[in-house]
Length: 325
DNA sequence: CACTTGACCTGTCCGC
DNA sequence: TGCGGACAGGTCAAGT
Image 1: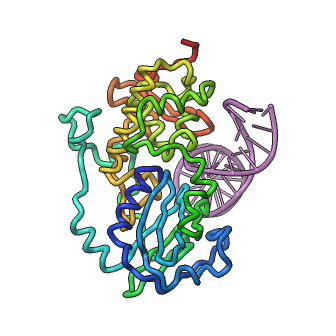
Image 2: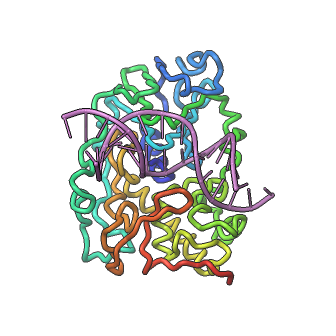
Image 3: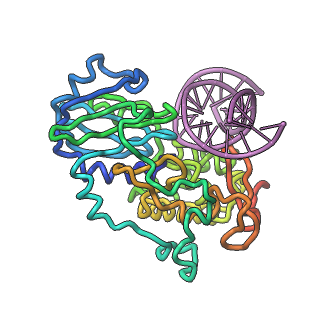
C-alpha cells in the first residue's frame, strides 16, 4: 500500500533514472488511466524529455519538457517499474539498510531482525514480486529512446495517471486540499496539534488517515506511529493530552524517515522503481502482527476495526483516551 | 456542518 | 477440488 515512504522511495529511484530520457512511445489500454486528459495524450508525451520527478503526499509527478506532467496515484496496488540498462547500474550502487541497528525502538541486542518468513509465516512473499513485464496488471507503458521502459502496473485498478499542464498541477483539486508534508522542514509540532484539533471529536486514527490534516499517512504508519506514541487508535483527539500529541508528532516523523531508509513497506504488492521490495516490514511493531506478542511488553497484539480500517494495537502499551481532559 | 460508512476493484485465503 | 464469501485499503460520494 504505497504511502508516503513508499512513494518517496519510488520517486528517489525514478529521479535517478528518468531525467534526460526522451519518450519514444506511449501505450495504454485503460481508459480510466487518463481521465480528464487532453484527447491527444500522445501529442504531449511522445517526443518530450523527462525533466524532473516530484512527490506531494502520495502523488508522484513526472514533469516533461513539453510543459505537461504525468501525475500518478498508486492507491492500493499500483507500481511504477523501470526496466533498462540503467537499472542494473543504479542497483549496483545501492546499499540497503538491513537489520535494525538504527531502529531506536528495538534493543540492538535483538539485531538483526527475524526473517520475514519467521515473523509472518511461510505465505509471506520473499521473492521478487515482479516478473516479466508487461503482465496482466500493466496499464500504461512508456518506452524511452534507447530501449528502456517504464511500466505502470495496477492489479486492482484503483490507481490513476493523469496528464496535465505542469503549471496546473499545484492547482489540481486533489493536491490543493492536501495537508502539509509531515517531513517538511517548516512543519512544527504546534502545526500538527492545531491540525489534529480541527477534528477534535474524531478518533485519532481517522484523523491521521485524513489527507487534509497531514499528507501521506496511510494505514501502516498510522498504526505504527500510534503504537510508538502509546496512544490507542480509538482515542478521541480532544481527550489526548497535549504532551501525547507532541509525542505522536515526533514518532510519526521518526517512523516515516526510518521507513524511507528501509525503502518502504512491502506487505503484498509494493515495489520500488526497480521492482525491489521494501524492508520496513521487518521492523514493524504492530502492523499485521495480530495474535503475536508485543515486542515491548509481550502481550498479544490484537486486530480491531477503527475508522473502517483493520487496526493493530497493543492494549497494554497504548492508552485509550476517551473522557474530556 | 461534522463525522462515518459504503463503493470502487481483483487476487487471495478460509471454510464448507 | 471447487466454490462462495470475506478481506485487503486510499479516496470520494453518499449517508447519518
